[in-house]
Image (cartoon, rainbow, N blue to C red):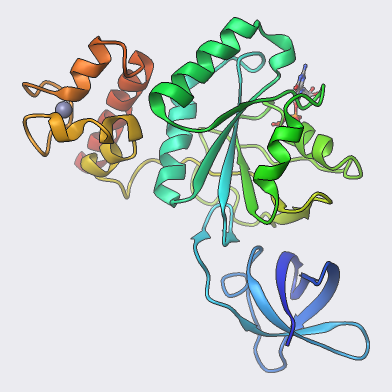
Length: 292
Ligand code: GDP
Ligand code: ZN
């Protein structure tokens, strides 16, 4: 039986990519599948009917599953950021990176709108987030098409979810990658999002002609860190993790503890000061949640 991938759904109809063709599928007879059972990104076994439609017989086990946006089998998050408009918000960026670490998917930071900023500023950003923090960073311009040839191979055969402030260029990027899709308008992501705000919105996975699927979704929503403890938060900062074996205390939170290798690295300029400051802010947030 052919296996396909669910790319979107509408009421009880699922659109499944089967061997490169989009097939309209209904769940099998007596089962009424709802959104929690089948979601975008799912691999499903499909029985093709003579009328050209399909029946979903089975949902294959998921590798992972995001709740907001509701997408299964996510391979990576493309975190879109810019040094032009809207104003660079590093706390927001670091918060998104923590959420992506928590979701357990790969990260690729796309520094967009490089046509609008000085090359030195681009280099400084790359040095900070690629060399010091350790995430892959790709400078691009969705508008001018810069960096897109380097980006495409990262997308082939994978499910990517976009995250980033409204206005950083997520929709423009999808249109640049897929010129046929002038209709794309990626939903907004707001740091102030609260529970439930995006739950009713349907996710669509856009098949790229060069291969791969990109979620046209509001990206990640940023609930407070109710389900993170302080040490888990700490462990979502990869540049800390690489050093904390050298802290005097194994449970060091890198605040005021003596002989802290992370604080030493901040002082030596090996860990970006902004990352450390943002970590302290997020740590306060986590503690405030716990007290509450
Ligand atoms: P979204 O809210 O993240 O989907 O952002 P949009 O894709 O709607 O882009 C916001 C604005 O930034 C639009 O006016 C785009 O044309 C513009 N924009 C997006 N990417 C670039 C870029 O690489 N360079 C320049 N100069 N403008 C861009
Ligand atoms: Zn420490």
